[in-house]
Length: 252
Ligand code: BEZ
Image 1 (cartoon, rainbow, N blue to C red):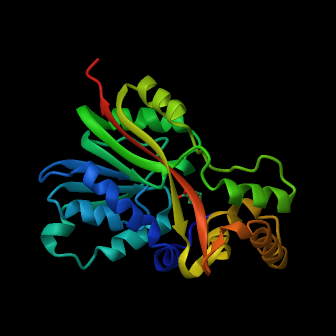
Image 2: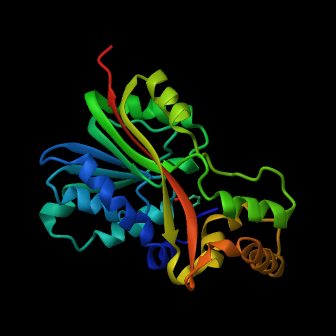
Image 3: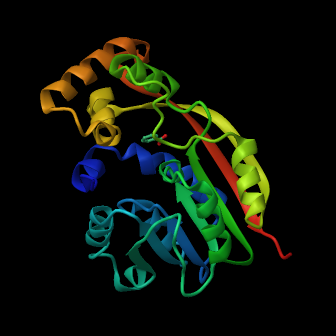
C-alpha cells in the first residue's frame, strides 16, 4: 500500500520539524556524503544538503520519493546537484560508494527486520562513519496502541518496532557499529489539525485493510473515546517516546 504523500506533506510537518534538532547532532560538513534513510518527502535531506554535504535520500515508497524530487526540483542548481533521491528498502539496500554518515528520522520503526537494517547501515558506511538516528522507542504511542487494541479486539497490536536502548544498541553493535550515545525520552507531540483521527488514518489504516470505510470511521471514533486522555487543552497530543542513537562504524 502506497503512502498518500501529498496529504502527508500537508498535514504531518511536525514529523520533520521535530527532526530538525537531530540535524545539529549530525553536524553535516561540506563535502561529506550523507544518506538520509527513510527520507519521506525529503525536507530534512534538503536541509542537510544546505550544509554543502552531498545527500542521498532513500525511501521504500515511490510516492514519497516522487514528492521529494518534486519539492527539490526548483532548488538552486548548486543545492540540487548535492541532492538525489532513490527508492530502496532500509533492510536491503546497498550503495555504490560508502557514505560518511547516515541520518534517519522517524523511519526505522517501520523497518521490522531491524537486524538486516543494522547490517545495511554498517555496510554503507566508511570506517569511522557515523549513524545519527531517531525513531519510536519502547513505550511509544502506548495509549494509542492500547486504545486501538481494545476497540479492534486485536491482542498485542503493534505493527511497528519500538525497541529499548538495550535491544537496538545490541543490534547495532552486532552489525559492527559502536554506540556512543543513546537516549530514550518522552516527546508529547501535538497532532495539529489532523488530530488523532488523521494520525490513525495516515499511519494505521493500512493495518485494517479488511474494514469498510464506515467500519473504519466507527473504529476511529471509538478509539478517540478510549484515548480521550490524549485530548489536552483543545488538541490531540500523541504520547510519543523517542529513541535517539549515535553510533560509529568500528575499525575491527
Ligand atoms: C512515530 O513517529 O513515532 C510514529 C509515526 C507513525 C506511526 C507510528 C509511530
